[in-house]
Image (cartoon, rainbow, N blue to C red):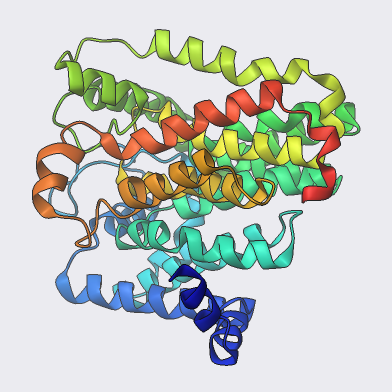
Length: 400
């Protein structure tokens, strides 16, 4: 039976369709059409609160208002992005809502598409990776999430180091950090940098430039005060997220807290243990020369960033799922059964669980209350950590 299905799928019509679906231009068109459709749907439904938060950071900066205070007449929740973000959003904020939010979404989507294209893997695998992340990308789109661009920033930090473009690697790391702290994880690739002193110098220069840049457009004292306000805003958000009912904390710690019913369980033991396990493979210095080893580390970084953050919410998982997809695509073929099972598990529970494809009862009674969206990514991250510690990557370079 299986052989008959396989033979049927190999008919010319299916082969041509398969080749067409792998065309980057077609995939890009699909991404663009979906982004425009999502923007139109959310605009018509009046469901663009995150975009409103982003938009008003620019206007609040112009007026010298606290960027992190609550403004219930303008939007729900509060802003948690760095002062530099107020400048980044400006070109979109000055436009009417629909064109502004549409162009914002397109900019994020195109940025991620470009970033994935820079990965040092086979073009066919990149095309498949585009499809793998699409559903999770849509989840982020519906919230107008900047996490789409954070994913791109982390990938480009890595890709720039791979191409020995330290100037741009430093830019992406510093830019991502000053906009949203997640960008700092790009420093995880420091051990792969060639010309470390110059890279450090570039990081210092970009830190000064990007820290001061908003001061050209807004009051210097206001920006300095905003950095202080940003720190307290993040600290407050961390404490609020570590609850049993928030929409955040979809993380390893969140799963433990919510399954146990104990909101007082601290983050620190998890973070220390996670960082130690994350850093141990660096000791395998001989493996650093392997592209495969470094790609696995990129996958690890993308997943680690999310599963060890109690600020993680469902749309944040575009970052982690890019890591899951990358890991699956760079695994030597044929993939082991456990790899395939974990990948399918992640597609079902992580990617599809927030959508209507998944039974609502299970989603509302189990997935959300216990942060189970994080579970497949947690398991895959532990597998990647084990692989980084044990696999002889220098013997697998040809499997790229």
